[in-house]
Image (cartoon, rainbow, N blue to C red; front, top):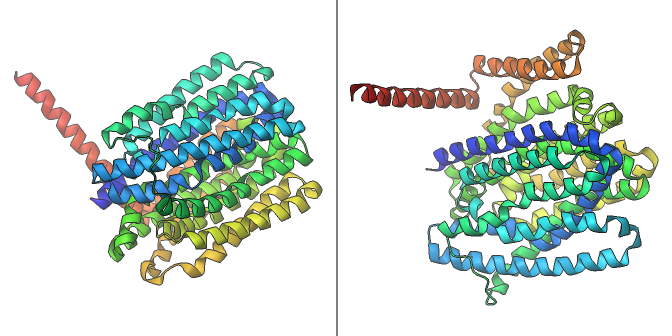
Length: 496
């Protein structure tokens, strides 16, 4: 079950994450030109404030809930009891978070002009809490998650082109973004009944749930501070325009980072069970799959993003955002460290319940990030924000490495990276040549992505890369099965 389930869920997740690439490609070039850097900066500054409130509302519920619910998912009664208690805790913390938000908006005068925007953006917090999407992840229902995500993205694209037509429409854009990212939470209230009855209850096992939830909250707080401090400090010291430039680079970086990091949620449920049972073979199998996925898809993304940064910035934001090229190139290097950190941090330590180690690593990297941001951003601008992100993430990874258990790690897994590295070097040469051959920016990116990816995967197939060969063979087998099934149905129809 494990291997097949992971492969199926990975396919669904790739479809979902591919849509997260497609829809920003469709919408962001339009939105960035319509709203202009200043209003893009307002949107992202508001999101940075809501991000802190969202963190307070969710505590460490999502990761804890996925990890614990996956262990009892075959027992409907136990799952209903556990999910009801976790949801109740989450709704209470959401109520507290909104009180804190109200105080901040009333007391902090500089946020006066942002009040309406932040209140609208904060709706995502309550929608997320009510949706309790962690139930679907624990049940590995990635098919539903994928279909639902794409449906709301299509709806948001339509609404954007209808209601966002000039710079002052940034409020409309904020409403549509909330609908796109969190509106599905309302649907989930009904859908999750197929798995369990999630009811609000005052009787929660606080002694059982609160310590790990608060531990994860502290860790996520450090991560959120790490993620949002650069945007916040840029906004307070350099202004909305610089936030607009930097946040454009971050948005592009986050698309790829989320795709590569999404493997975490695909394997989290099974890994949590495997670590709980100390099933070494299952753990090694899943970890091998994660390394293969991350190497085959991650390395060419890093190389391509670095080489094509100016073109990607121009397409996404227009020439007025070209100053974001250097930060984006620096963030492409961060993507490599982030992918390695995700394997060490989320895939290994969090799934194994090593929350204290994760908390310490996150705290140290967050403190380092804030200090370096405060010192260097006012002097060196947005480029410093990207560099401090690299240094801080590297710090977290180095802290965590000694806590990896050797019995779960296979030394042979390092060889899985060699073929993707070699293929990416050849791909890089091809991309550099194409930059000098093709003059049109859009055509250069399209041809580079298609031709570069083609060269990359042909080389991997030639080198007999295990992950690539197995994936291609699986796809071909399913296509043949689909074709034969339909041909047989047509024959039966003709016979009748």
